[in-house]
Image (cartoon, rainbow, N blue to C red; front, side):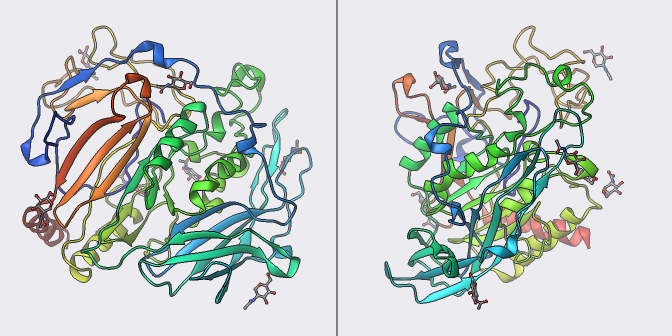
Length: 482
Ligand SMILES: *[C@@H]1O[C@H](CO)[C@@H](O)[C@H](O)[C@H]1NC(C)=O
Ligand SMILES: *[C@@H]1O[C@H](CO)[C@@H](O)[C@H](O)[C@H]1NC(C)=O
Ligand SMILES: *[C@@H]1O[C@H](CO)[C@@H](O)[C@H](O)[C@H]1NC(C)=O
Ligand SMILES: *[C@@H]1O[C@H](CO)[C@@H](O)[C@H](O)[C@H]1NC(C)=O
Ligand SMILES: *[C@@H]1O[C@H](CO)[C@@H](O)[C@H](O)[C@H]1NC(C)=O
Ligand SMILES: *[C@@H]1O[C@H](CO)[C@@H](O)[C@H](O)[C@H]1NC(C)=O
Ligand SMILES: *[C@@H]1O[C@H](CO)[C@@H](O)[C@H](O)[C@H]1NC(C)=O
C-alpha cells in the first residue's frame, strides 16, 4: 500500500478508541477516549527488508506436472461449505506464451472424516488467465491451470481429511486436513488472524512465522498480497527506474511468477486454515486492452454468489457466530453503486434473519512486511507535512485538500497527533481477534520486532459491543434509506 491507502475489511458499526495495553488489566473500548501517544521507531530496525528471491526453496515448485500445488482453502457462505483451490501445470513467461487448456486436468477433491478414508468426492472448475503486454521489452505471462472446488454439506466443528487433484491422471496431492467452524453464536471462532500489505520479503516471512505460532482458525488477508507489481522495480531486480527502462510502455509490467511463489510460500498455512482475501491497489495489475485484477479474480475463490454480491470484489460470509463483510476499496463504493446497494441488503438480512448476538466489526490494517518498508514519520511531525506535489503513486493518489473542519481546519496537515489516533508505533506484524462472548472481543496487535525484547504484543484492547446502540442505529439508517 501507499501511505495514503487503507484496507477496509469488515464493517464498522460501533465506534471505539484503541489504546496500548496498560500493565495488568486490559483496557476496554468503554474506557476511552484515551489521550494520544506515539512510540518512536528505533531506526536501526529499518534495515534489510529485501524481497525473498525467486530461487528461495520456499518459492520453488516441488511437485511434478499435473500435480496440485499452491493449495488454499476459503470459506464459502457458512460452516457447511468450503472452497479448495490449487494450481497444476507450469505457468509460462516470455515471448509467444501458449495458454494451457484447463479441460485437460480434472478438479477433484476426495474428503472424509477419517484420515486415509475419503467417503466423498466433489468436482469443480478449472481456468487459466493471461497477463499480456503488447509493448517493447515487456514479457507476457500465462498461468498454470487454477482449480476451484466447493465442498458442501460439511458438519460443523468437524475435522476433515482431503486430497485434491485428478484421480484419472493419478495426480492427487498428499493428504491435508482442516476443521470446520462451530455453528452456534455461542461457540465463537477461537482466533482470527488479520494481515494486510503482506508482500514477500524477509519481513513478510517473519510475519507469517509469528502468525503461524498463534495458530488461528481463520486468516483475513485484507489487500495487497504478493506485491508482484513491484518486483521488477522496488524489488530491485534489475530495473532501477521503470520509465527509463521501458519508455514506451504506458502501463507497468507486473511480474506474475511472484504470485506462484507467494502461493507456494503460503501453502503450508492455507492448505489447513481458510484464508479470505479482498483486493488492494496492488491487485489491480492493469494489462493490455483495459483488463485488470486478472490474477486476483482467477486465483482466489470467494463466496460472491453465495452472499449474492455477484462480484469477487466484495462479499460476506458467516463463521463461528460472526458475520464478516469484506468491502472493496478499489471499485465503486459510492451511494449509487452496486456495492453500496448490496451492503445495505446484506446488513438488513443480517438484522432480520440471522441469530441475534452476531458480531459485526470493522478495523483498518496494513504493514504485513512488504517491500515498501516501514513508515516511520508522521505528517504532523515538524517539517514532515508532505509537499503538495509528492511523487504520485501508480494508483490511489493523494488528495490535496485542506481539512474543512476540526483542529486542522483550513490546513493540509495536522500539527499534532489527532485525537482519533490513540497510539502509534512503527512495526510490521499481524493482528489477532478473539471473540470471547456475545459482547466482548479481544484485539491484539503482534509486532514482529522481537528485538524490542518484550512481549511481541504491541497493542491490546477489549472491543465491547453495545447491541442496544447498534441496532437502534441500523433501524434509523434503514428507515431513512427506504
Ligand atoms: C525486516 O527484516 C530485517 C531482516 O530480518 C530486519 O533487520 C528488520 O528489522 C525488519 N524490519 C522490521 C520493521 O521489522
Ligand atoms: C504479448 O501479447 C500481446 C497480445 O497478444 C502481443 O501483441 C505481444 O506481441 C506479446 N509479446 C511478446 C513478447 O510475445
Ligand atoms: C470428476 O472428474 C474426474 C476427472 O478428474 C472424472 O473422471 C469424473 O467422472 C468426474 N465426476 C463427475 C461426477 O463429474
Ligand atoms: C479496471 O478496468 C475497468 C475496465 O477497463 C475500468 O473501468 C476500471 O477503472 C479499472 N479499475 C482500476 C482500479 O483501474
Ligand atoms: C457513483 O458511481 C456511479 C457508477 O460508477 C457513477 O455513475 C456516479 O457518477 C458516481 N456518483 C458519484 C457521486 O460519484
Ligand atoms: C490550504 O491551507 C493553506 C494554509 O495552510 C493555504 O495556503 C492554502 O491556500 C489552502 N488551500 C486550499 C485549497 O484551500
Ligand atoms: C463477556 O466476557 C467479559 C470478559 O471476560 C465479561 O466481563 C462479560 O461479563 C462477559 N459477558 C457475557 C454476556 O458473558
